[in-house]
Image (cartoon, rainbow over all chains, first blue to last red; front, side, top):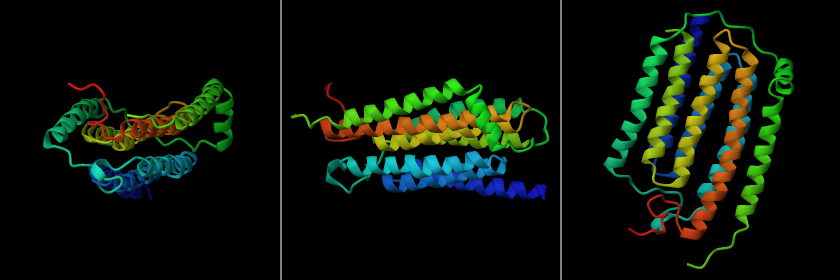
Length: 171
Length: 102
């Protein structure tokens, strides 16, 4: 059944590609967000394919469940530009697009060359990491990072609340 | 091509899409979406490197989990900043958000 992994990988790659193209080229920001969600599902599928189901479900829970809802709030609460439809972005010039393509292609081409040339030989897949051992690592070697990320989340939430209290300033 | 290379190329695709988006998008929310794409690529590369090499599996997976947590924190803060910018300057387009005229 090993060969089945390649069509599955191709399917997830197509999801990532279509979603990503939608996310960066869609005129409407809501459609861009839908593209991002499609990409997130594709990445989650790749986690499943790597036998990391915990991460796959965390990806759906955190990204699709929380982060994309936050971005949707950002789209709704910001004012449309030029009195146009809410969440619609003006068309970008060709120059900007070219600039973006150059900026994106150069590092990706360099890194892809390194990845392909320095690829290690194929190894057998390790057994799936159990949830219990993940928890043990979280309270062992990663205890400090675990605590720090809770502090970072708390600081981000407190900062967001503080920024939200600001009154509209007279211009 | 080994599976590791395939996953790394998928992660690079996400990175490239994110960079193109962050450079060419005109609104702050669109740039935030592009940043999320790049962070996803980072997580994918991290997990692939941990799963498909002799490295310790759990460390890579938990590292990707921490990346997800940081992405959530970052999205919260960026949302608040975008709201403040939109309220103060009346727009969230990068070209309009400028007070210095020149």
